[in-house]
Length: 327
Image 1 (cartoon, rainbow, N blue to C red):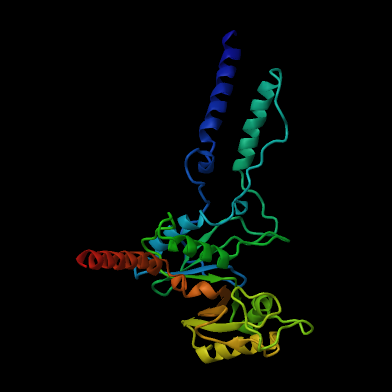
Image 2: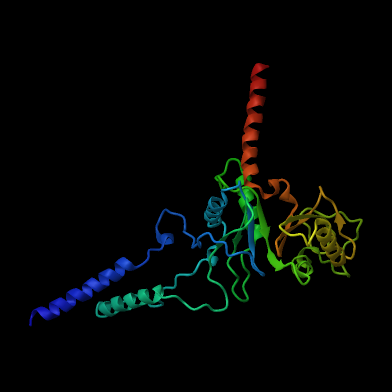
């Protein structure tokens, strides 16, 4: 009879211990290590209407390794707000009398945290690594933005990655498989005037000129163009596995929209541009983004070429030193 309470107590202690063992450890809580990102496995789920993300190129046969590498690098550049928040309880300290109750509550809370939560109108905050049915090209889908909140800007993310890599003396992102990164601010279906719809959503913030205080065509556009100032622009389309939209049609459609937004004051300049419109057509979807004038200096967002340029600079410096020594 005396052994029953003891046995029950042992069972309770063992169950609590088992809960502690089963509790998933969050790598982001460990000290001295970078925060881990929750990244889904590589899949072939395809690109969908409304997606936001990055096209990435690599050598043939290295697509999955490239995606995993990019997923790791993006963990350093995507804001922490995009991670699922770990909610703590709002209570302060606990008394010794309530310690056992708190332990039981902690166990229940941990079990509840392990159960899948219903969605609330937006997808879980994860990156999706997507392989495509063409070699050398893959896609990373960004988390969908919560209602009334701004999502991750792929243009800013890619630019920051390339700027960091371009700093020769800094510890920028080192890549083994990644080549070119193409940010995609939004994707639409090519059917039913999808390209025109995309132009209506992506281009106005960059090219709309107000009638009253818009600048004149004779006024030079400053680098890093300001609002209501005419700009010089270029259009760079890339078309894969699509025979409905050709290059000339894409350029003409985008240029006509920019002209209408700028009342004819924006000008085309393929080399000295202020803004570049990147248009990527893949099968039945089209993506678009607008990037700045440093697109060329950042090797068109090609991480591999940015890293290679450092070696070229080193060779030139060595040649200069040898020439100076010979003199």
